[in-house]
Image 1 (tube, rainbow, N blue to C red):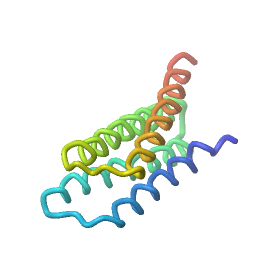
Image 2 (cartoon, rainbow, N blue to C red):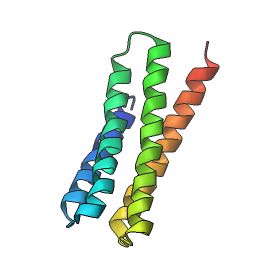
Image 3 (cartoon, rainbow, N blue to C red):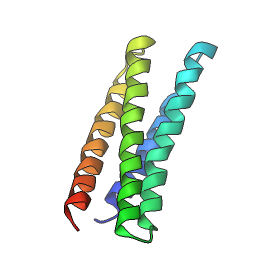
Length: 116
């Protein structure tokens, strides 16, 4: 399904939102939470922008940004998990999906770079 990545990114963002809303965050951890929200929402937003791009180069660039945002999201999830000792299955599932999305996006970017 050609739009599968778009829906997976959307569901990933929704999963992050629901996870973060389900917890109580202090002022210190809320700094990380805000960064996590920004990067997670950027993944899907850039994939959607890529769909409406006017050239292959622009499409590739949006996917590159989505990949960077996805990697940043994984970073912030790991900071919450390890730095704030948030140990639960949900954060592990979000990291797993983030890893899968990163692989898909990286593969897409590589394929786009090889096509001239």
